[in-house]
Image (cartoon, rainbow, N blue to C red; front, side, top):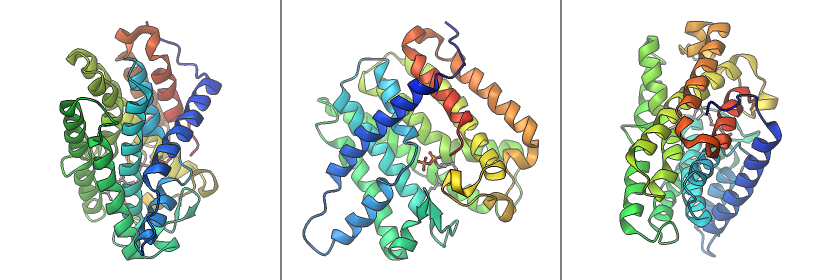
Amino acid sequence: MTGSLWRDTAAVDEAAAVTAKLTDSIVDGLLTAPPGLEARVYEAMRYSALAPGKRLRPLLVLAGARLFGVARRSALQVAAAVEMVHAYSLIHDDLPAMDDSDLRRGRPTCHKAFDEATAVLAGDGLLTLAFETLAHPDTHGSAAVRCELVTALAGAAGAAGMVGGQMIDLIAERQSLDIGAITRLQRMKTGALIAFSCEAGAILAKAPHELRLALRGYAHDLGLAFQIADDLLDVQGSADETGKPVGADAAAGKATFVSILGIDRARAQAELLINQAVAHLDLFEQRAELLRQVARFVIDRRT
Ligand code: GRG
């Protein structure tokens, strides 16, 4: 089964809209503010985690879980957890000590809407709540499965994954990296969380190793294609569409896939990666059609 790469726009858009609604309702429930003064940090967490975004990682969790018939509640708990980790990373990335950004998801960044200290705490609160959510019995009846999810997300989000990638990214502002080093940086910074999202359904279903490996292969190529699309949007997109400042990489003098390869070759590389990603899904046959469509969505997006 090779699967059509003609994007069924309506199917993906509907799946994305349903995913966003369901995931946001779980996050909303988890972020009910208590009556004390600490309500302010809940408000900041809600402001960022419920702001309009693509909810791509939750979509990957739900699409992956669907391959194995995982219970909806389990998949949604994981979708909410991964989105909270993503939201935390955006809050901290926007801080003056990092990217110093004023605009995110079409709104003032968390530290602009609140203040820097509150934004740091809101990120910390979202990160820790994500792990509490994975460890909750609603996520899975088996403690071993919950533990595996916690370990996998910690690996993806920590110094061997997203945090390590962000460290390299900060160093890249002062030191030029070649394409191999940039590829590694991006696999860690954005690819690791995308890979966790793709594999989570297999963990929940205790799926055979070879199926998990196939999803890892899909995620590996998808993550890089996502990053190239992001680099292209930074050059060709507008702040109105993306909801964040564009041209930031060039302004910071950072080497990206686009600055090294040029627009046409970067676009061709993203297409190649998407074809490779989809090829990993052959053994799931028709059941993986949504994941195939999501792959297309990732490089066709304007936001
Ligand atoms: C601060 C530990 C720490 C990590 C930050 C992911 C990250 C690391 C920074 C984000 C900076 C950035 C713009 C990276 C490019 C790729 C990316 C993650 C874009 C934002 O993700 P989308 O496009 O955003 O999925 P939405 O708003 O749609 O959820």
